[in-house]
Image 1 (tube, rainbow, N blue to C red):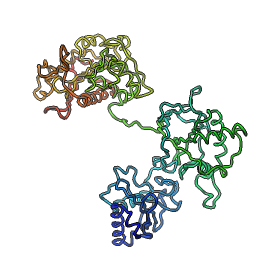
Image 2 (cartoon, rainbow, N blue to C red):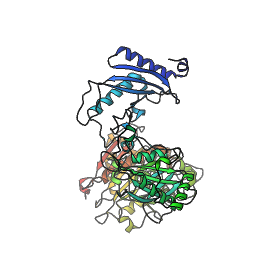
Image 3 (cartoon, helix red, strand yellow):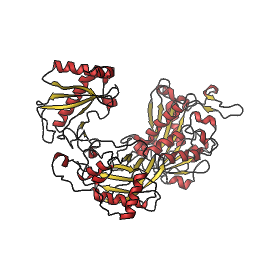
Image 4 (cartoon, rainbow, N blue to C red):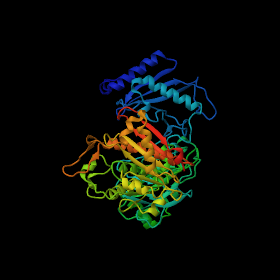
Length: 584
C-alpha cells in the first residue's frame, strides 16, 4: 500500500480492508485478493477479489456462474454507504438486480439491510446470498428494481418531477403535454388544448439494460444498440430507433417556444412483460433551439447521424412520479381505511376531531367530502386543530375545504352553508360523521333514520378531562335506532360495568376542573387535549368507522370506545353492539 493511500484512507475503509485481508488469510480457498486496493477520484477504495462459486447450486433460469467469479469491490469512505460489488464483463447483463449490466444490487434498502457492525464479513455474506439466490432463479424479474432501464434511477439536479396518472397508449409515438404545476412539478397529460410543453412520448422496442446514459449522443447509440452488441464485435439484434425518435423530437421542438427546454418521455418495455417503465428527460434550451433551427431549415424528416452529434450534450433526466393504476399499489392497501375509497362523505363539525378526520378520509380515497362548520378560526385553535396561521379569520369549513383540495386533485370537496347540509343532500351520502358534540344536531340526526337513509351515521367525541378517550356511535343504514338512543343505551351499559370505569366520564357531567377556559371573559369552556391527542383519537376512530364501511352486508350498529396509550388504566378498545331490540 502506498504512503498516499495510507494517508487518505478513512478509518472506516482501513477497518474493512483489514477485515478483508484477515478473511482471505483464514479462507484462502474461498476468498482471494487478486489486486490490492487503489483510491479513485471519489475517495472509494477499489480492489478485486475472487470467490469460489463452484459449490453454488444452479437451477434452470438461474444465473450461470463459473467455478470462480471475480468482483470489483468499492469501499466508500463513509460508514453510511455499504461496499459495492461490480463485474467487468457482460455475462450478467439483463439479469434481475444487475444494474447497468455490471453492478450487483445486493442491498435493495441499504438503510435497513446494511449493518456496518457486521463489517466486511457481513458484506461478503450478503454477496454470497445474492449469488446463491441468483443461481437458483429466486429473483422475480417482474419486480426487479428498475430492471427495464438497467437498474438506474435517472435523475439530474434541478429538474422537475413529472407526474403521470394517465395510461400510456401502446402506439410507437404519441404527443402529450407537460403542464407546469409548480417549479418542481409538471403533470403529463394527453388531453389536447392544454397549455404546456409539447412532449413526445416514445415507446421503445427494447429494454435498456445499460441504462439510458447521461449524454444525448450515447443515449441515441443505446437506442440503436441497447445491448452494445457492436462494442462486442457482434451485429446488433435491435432495429435502429434513433431516426424515428429524432423526427418526433424535432416536430415537438418546432412547436414549442424559442428559449424553452425540450422534454420527452420514454416508455421502456420490461423484459418480464407488463406495463412499460417510464423515463422523462429534457434537453437544455440552447440545444432545443438548435433542434428548432434544424427543423425550420430542413424539416422534421432530416436524417441526423447520431455519430456526429456533440458527445457533450447532456440529457437532464427528471424524477418520475409514475402513479398509473397498473403499476401502483396504494401504500394503505388492505387497511381499515380502504372502506372510505370511492365514498361520498359528509363531516359536520370541523374542530378538534373533525378537522383531522377530514384529512385522514381525504387521504384514504373518498370520492366526495362535504364539510360543514360556520365557526371562525382564531389563533388559539392552532394548538390542536388542523389549521395554520394563514387560515385565521376564515370559516373552518372554507379553510378545511382548501386544505383537502390541496391533498388530492381527484377529490371533490364542497362546503355546506350553515350548521348542517340540506336534508335531501344528506340522504344521498354514504357516510355522515357528526363531530359537533351538539345536542341539537343529535336530535336533528334522529329525523333521517329509517329505510330512506342510505348513509351510515357516525357520531364522534372525546372526553373533557384529558382528550385521550374517543367514542364513535355507529348507526347502520336502515337502522331503527337513532344516534341518541344508541348513545343512551351505550351509556347505561358502560356506567353499569366497573371494568369500563375509564369510559364513565363520556356520560358523566363534566366537573369544573375537567374543562378549561381558553381566554379571559365569557369564554366558552372546552376540553383539554393537544393536537397529538386529538389527531390520534381521530385516526383511531377513522379506522373503526372504516371497518364498518368494509362490511358488505348487515352493517352492525353499535358504539366503539377507544383510549390512547397514555390514558388511565382500562381497556384500550371496547365495542358495544346495539341491543337486539334495536337491530334493523
